[in-house]
View 1 (tube, rainbow, N blue to C red):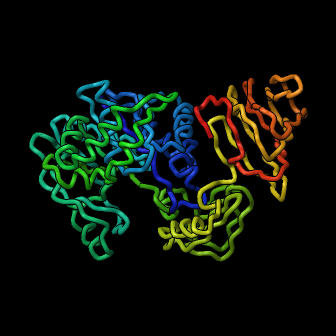
View 2: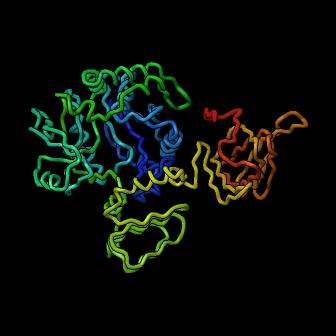
Amino acid sequence: MLFPVILCGGSGSRLWPLSREAYPKQFLDLTQSGQSMLQMTLSRLQGLSGIAAPLAICNQEHRFLVAEQLHSIHSVPAGILLEPVARNTAPAVALAALSALESDADALLLVLPADHCIGDVAAFQAGVAKAREAAEAGYLVTFGILPESAETGYGYIERGEELDSLAGAFSIQRFVEKPNKENAERYLADKKFTWNSGMFLFRADQFLAELKAYAPVMHSACEKAYNNAYRDLDFIRVEEEAFTACPSDSIDYAVMEKTTKGAMVPLDAGWNDVGSWSAIWDISNKDADGNVVVGDALVQESNNSLVYSDSRLVTTLGLSDTVVVETADAVLVADKSRVQDVKSLVVALKQQSRDEGAMHKVVYRPWGSYESICASERFQVKQIIVNPGQKLSLQMHHHRAEHWIVVSGTAEVTCEDKAAGEDKVFTLREDQSTYIPLGHRHRLANPGKMLLKLIEVQSGSYLGEDDIIRFDDDYGRDK
């Protein structure tokens, strides 16, 4: 069986302010297709033969985002593996290989980053079929993208001779680091060079054997971490101590640059790693002046620019080769030639301890989301949205009281009655409200079939999110 391994890590900092650490680009609909990058990655697998349920790999903070996005497109994963710390792609895929081998001793892994765009799905699937033949013959296959320009932001692969009896698959001559402009232009002219896509296909046992031969410490750490893993709801938690001790390295460095079993399949499928705002401009529909306009925007006398409005009207006049991205709490204005450096702004924001570097105003939780609408000294107003059938933890706060006003939907409220010495449960409907006193145990749930929307007014001496004592939580959170 062919096991898709979906790598869901990464922060996408070059697509700030839309992509942020708490909700990075793989979970966003960047192509206006109605699906996130993760969901598009899974959707393009439909039609492949002999394919198993996907294995998703992510960090602990994004586990519920991954689960919810898979659920919303009716994709049931073989497992969602949680990395306690980031250790690059080689250890992540080693965990996936160990998991797949529990189900199938002949498992093949199709390793795909969750944040790539592929325009020609048929060509992609044809490339997978070629790579599968080579993988079944014992090769570790990487996909090389036929270059369209002299890119300095990608690594390159120089291919060798075509493999015997495997049409369309080639040996690997060498891997090349991100080149300067002169070398990139030379690689573009030389038809033997392709961009390094970061996608792979190989037998799970073959990858682990090569990893053990060339990176034995990594192999041992991953094996120990997985052997001591345990199930937590829909997730597989590997042993933190063992995985933390694992060296950090990519598949290329740990295995592909050393193995004698490497192969590559050229791929011409409209691939884009969507790594910057200029990449978004490249793949988007443009007006007669070469502008990409998304959202509520009025663009005049501007050309070859990207204008992205997320929450309000954005207007431009006389711009050229410029990127303007507006969100509810931040605006980016950059020369299109400098968008690869946006991540330096994110670093600067974090150095200044600014929340905008990592968090959106809308914060997603496994039960729904909340958004801070207004905040000042001793009070804060939030909009809270609870998905049907979901509920928040049973909790209390030491420093704040709360008022809840239902805007739409039905709320099931649990609130401690200290005088009676018990928790009381009651229902609120549209335009009804309740008061949660400071220090009282409480819970909010949505028993209905439509979204529950309510306004929460907090008041107190401290309003931070860490003022939560949890007594019970459906999602296994203890803080």
